[in-house]
Amino acid sequence: MENVDKLQDILCGKGITERLLDDVEAGSEDFGGNLIGPKAIEQYFEYFFFNRHQEMDYPVSAQTVGRDDTLLNLLSINSMAMDEYGRSHDTAPNIYLRQSFMSAARAFKVIDAATRGIIVPYGEAGRDLVNKLCSAFEVEKQFVLLRRAQQYTVNVFPQDLEKLQKAGAVSAIQKDVDILHLSDARYYDQSFGLSQTPEGTMEVLYA
Image (tube, rainbow, N blue to C red; front, side, top):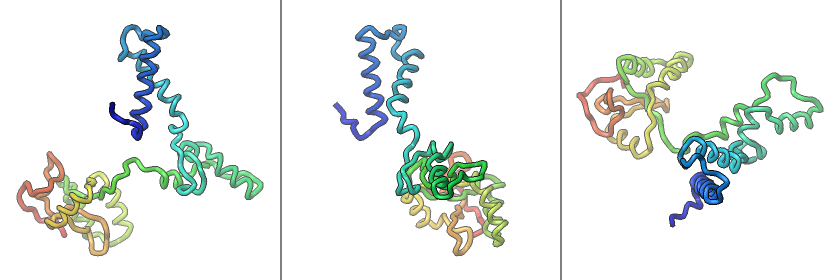
């Protein structure tokens, strides 16, 4: 039998499934004769969330935010921070929003992968945006353009980025500015996206 001890979600799901089967065998549940029907699925998730309710708060460590806390608390009543402030100042903070948004942002990672964003020349608007970025030297203008560039950015893994760099297909938008764009449009297909090999004809982009 496969060892799933290190895969907590799968391990938890395995235990709950065994519990449901035990309920059926003991006669305490029959789920309308359908083990993959709505009633069985509802019971499965009731067990699942009850078993893992503490993890669903997304605990964070003192090393990350300065105290042992949870993301749920940081973004809701933030009781620990409020209590700490009260002890230090003998009064509650006179603020409307009490959430620790910056601390929560530091602690939260959706995908723990070392990817790097590349701005791609998608369509006429994408090509125009790349050209403007490469020639924008005012900080305010760069900020506005970079916000627009988010929708033209794709993330690549280090090994893929290395291949593109060796091929000369990727450049910084400006000297000493650590933001990359695809400077060789042959490596981007409007239908299929970023490619590791040149697919189209050479198109001159601002570099």
